[in-house]
Image (cartoon, rainbow, N blue to C red; front, side, top):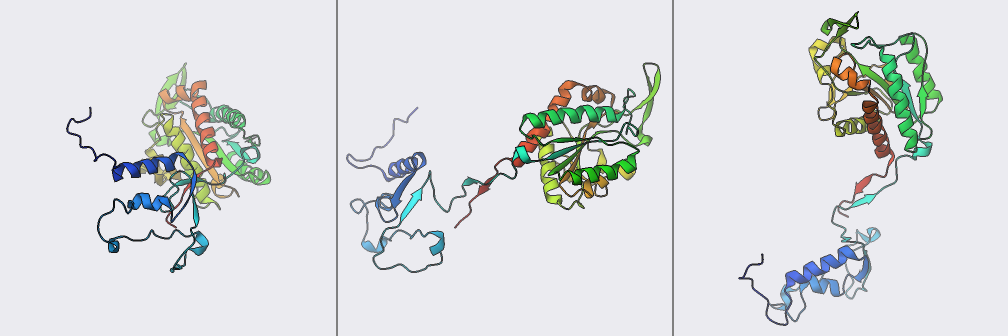
Length: 334
């Protein structure tokens, strides 16, 4: 409630503070053109009627120059007013966001979705004896659908054949031949054999490790466009995290052996995998997504569900839209 001891200005006088607030509010609401030597500076300084002290305390308003005149240090004795356009606050010394051009046009931006592994070389085996390739293909197809629905009409699903190592070169060649703008390889995670435990599922011997779970995102610092690769990887990881998913933290541990990798961002779960062929040899930004652990018995069930595929595909699509969409640049001092 207002204080009963509030003080009011004498009749006929408007407090300077209210005047300034009113002017600033007007500037926020309406784009206007004013003269730098006109009424605006008088309001901020206060009119001669209400100012106190001699003229030696009164300074002329600072000159507002256009960029091409920014180096000028002298003013003519009787300058003509220069019109300065103010949109909103429009003050040049404030850091204001301004839209810049989009990085890409979705309808023409070609994303290659690489389905990890092949039917002949299926990758890891889940805790319930399902091949990783099956998980990869299902998720990649859902991501393809989601991207196309968001306007990325040039999205391509990349399926290769043959053994693991020869297929890596085929993937790189195919992505390069397609003149892809972005390469995203889809995988599901496991752990080194030394960390596996035995169990039986539906009468069949299998292996599991419930010790670790979560997604992870990889880039290669040897990619010809590492900075862009990292930028997209960060967006994917950020969107995965926004969906309530946690990243896998085991890759920094010594127990991972040759699968140990440096963590580039501990907030989002982006790792470097510098020597992986599909990440370092493609001629476009490249990212690998380990969507989750299929060797963890609880997470395997989630990874096999349409709901989890929808969550992950939505995260990837959101990352692609943000990657291509208008960014915000900030204007610094003139």
